[in-house]
Length: 219
Image 1 (tube, rainbow, N blue to C red):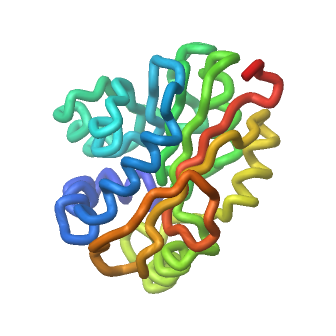
Image 2 (image 1 turned 135 degrees about the vertical axis):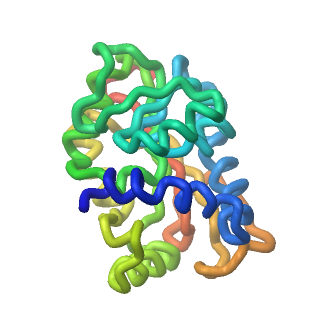
């Protein structure tokens, strides 16, 4: 079963995670990290892999695309204008967006390199990309990799990346990293009681929001 089929089948279960103790405790920190990385980013905004629309709603991202129709129905109920499609073949014209978000979703893509090239295509020349990831070499990344090995219904389809690996893929698509925001320094697997958001790239952070621009862009 593909990752899209898994999320389509388990859409309600996926969305309910955000209402559980762990989801409720980590989401505000992840949202804050992404918001800081996206400060001043040009509009219109699109989230690729919008899922059920939790981040899009919180960050006021008006447009979303995802292959899982049952997730899109949840996102649409949250006020997001949604389109069904895959990251590797985005159903949008060239240069349609000022900023494209790829939040956590990058570890569930069939071809991340192809997706980054597609994002470059639909992005304006002066546009930005905001990625949110759980680094593979962080404590949280190792926690989820262990869950994948145990056959977790979502993470069994995931491929986790280090920031260095993402740098290499982004460079091939014509992007350079220009901002880093780190959070989730608490031990993984338990609700976070108190954490921090720092505008730095910290190897121990469980969630990192990164901002990218075209290499040739006039910033």
